Image (cartoon, rainbow, N blue to C red; front, top):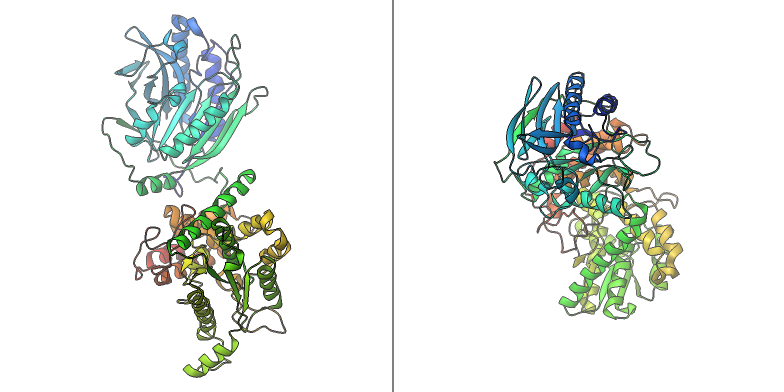
Length: 631
């Protein structure tokens, strides 16, 4: 069976020798053996790769067709020693008609043959459409079904085939095949180069995998195809749910024979379950293929920062969009409650800084003066000079209404009222400060006829590292779906915007400041309370929460992925420790998330109890913790 839901696949394109099936079979088997050694369970080769695609009227020659069948049998016999399925293309004659086919081979057997249904104008001159063909063909001593209504189950994963240019039709077979249960599509192709065509192919395959919530393997023919009227550039790719996992496009230098990566079937199945895309047709025949799952290392990269685009060029565009979503949401809320006044509690930390910048952007969009934003800083027992000065710099240089209210005296009075020893620095000591700050911010908002804009972020809310009725609460939470790892990049992005040029240095220093609630007294003037020293690295917790909430991955898979993504950074045992803590806190702190204030979802992960994460407060973590303990 697959390890942690991954299936290793390859898209291959050997050099083609036109009209020489015997030589082509050798090339195909050489590459098949190479990828099989790397643990590949399925390899796809280009359209008509046994003969070559660009042969024109030679396909009418019996010699070519018979030699192609001989070559197919060579590949079949060669597959006996390969624990892998292969998809190869060849011309096949049946009842006086000629079909452009893809044959699936595994374990010394021809498992099934799929004819091309929708032909290009050039192909239609030679081949017949296989749209209504259903037969059993005898190839040597083998029998195999031939039909366009075939699905292939490889190591418990259902696949299907569309061929070449069929992928670009409005009625592409992939649509009906996925509705019939196919979890990934295999496309053996041969399409000649034209300016911009390779980009179009890439985007089409990528978007098809996104729309159909599937994997997609595309193997486009290259070196060796005829250049009589064009050039065939080798194009190989594997996509998954809109992500390009592996890609190669070579026109002049064609020295890459294959790309290998891993399809994450857990991800595909989770997406389909959440969108109710289930098998809707039983008119297809499923052919099981016996391929042994392999315990091999992942070939695909797993980003340690799943909330961030991996393409650096896309990052600023993503940050700009997120910033606008946050500001637009707050603007709409202010307009709805008929006010243009807001209050933000500014600590000099990341969360309050982003909330402040978002509020400024919203007021600017409303045409309201920035002085309508009351920024209040509330020093307490653990406030450092660094965060205090950064808070003051932000408020003063951005033209806001500035208020400074110390919470020390109020908290001392409160401790006296409830009989709490001021020297006992426990949860009472810390939470009282957070609640005092929230009370002040909300009461000022009431004074002004405005709203208190919350600062809490997604990471804190998942870990429950927020005070119930304190910083956990606000009148609108603009950071509710922004994790800590994204927050840091958002503030750096804002620092480089012209509208915040006056505080650029301050913003950069805030990003570099250790994350802390600053609720415990300083020691020799130095900060002793650092959040990541208590709950663990936010980069790990953000990784866990993304895959747990987005795809429902198990603790074992979370640990497996984290070990791969953070190899060289965290040891396996360290990851297990923080994963266990994450699971404990995540389940235990649901009561805080069950009564969150409104806030905008900016991405696919949300913990809003009104539609993002709807679970009972008393759900138990035992099953997840037991699995984590068994790692």
